[in-house]
Length: 139
Image (cartoon, rainbow, N blue to C red; front, side, top):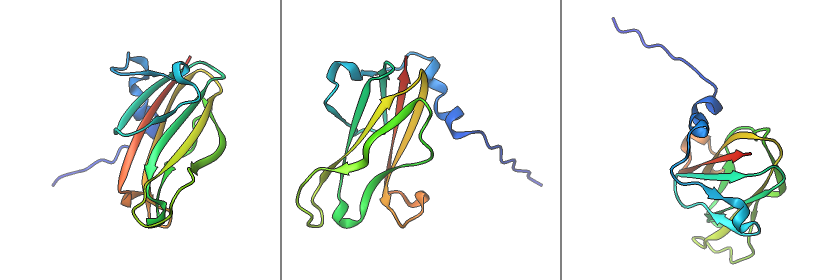
């Protein structure tokens, strides 16, 4: 007989395990402050100082019902500024890609892991078409 144990740990503990290590590729958001960083890979890392702003840009096709959303609560190290996931002006025909921008401000030091899901709002998060993990270290 086989026994399967389901051990649940807080997602943030698992996802931020690398915050204590030197990331292989970290973007210093201070170098390009008003710039919206395009998030095109599964994993991105940013380093901020308290008070700095981080703008993340995702390509989305809202006319098809798909858009980016944050999976889970916002970590205490960051505060969301402005309209979450605001869309750039543009055409609304199906298949037209538009930039969806998320803006965060570093509130306190620590590690934050943000998981963004590309899905339709009415579908369960397990049905997400894509995901992006963004690690933010605030010093």
